[in-house]
Length: 196
Image 1 (spheres, rainbow, N blue to C red):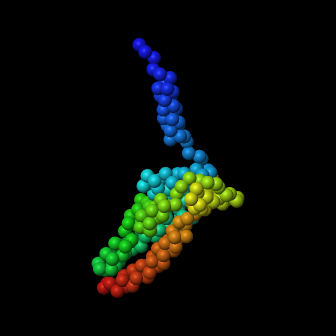
Image 2: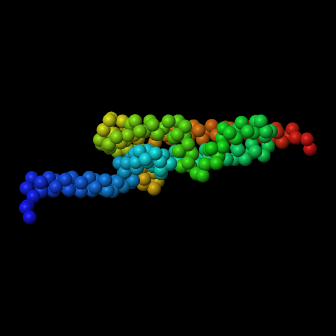
Image 3: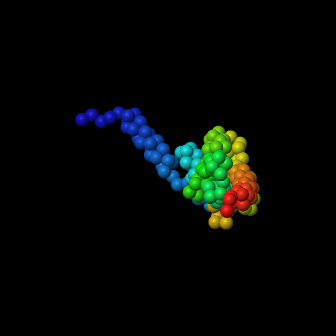
């Protein structure tokens, strides 16, 4: 039996090394989510795999609270609307708020808003590798290879949270709270107008 030429053996060895290196890179662990790079990597993966709900764990605490608040307030408002409002008005409000009120938890509310407000495509356009991280105490900024800057804040549990959506979620929670006040006032009026 003839031995294969040295070039063929060398090519096979190189191919195996390249394949092994690719597998090792693909299987390397993420940086800890207790680093800005690790939180960013998990957000990037969840967006790339179309699982925005999974990014919720890497939002700052205030954004998470706002998402839960939206769900809780919308649920309370929908319950009040169902029990006191006349049919036409009831259906209009329930259609507007049902998805948020029926969301299982805050991560689902975040995913709803991510879909409705185009946050996923916005992130997809801008996510790229980390060029460097600027950290100042409890705040950090990821600067990507494309020059995009993402602000993070260290949460109480040590995990870093993206701050990008906090203001919008907090504004939506405030809107839901104002809507609930209107619903409560109208519910009292409807209840008072009912024949006894």
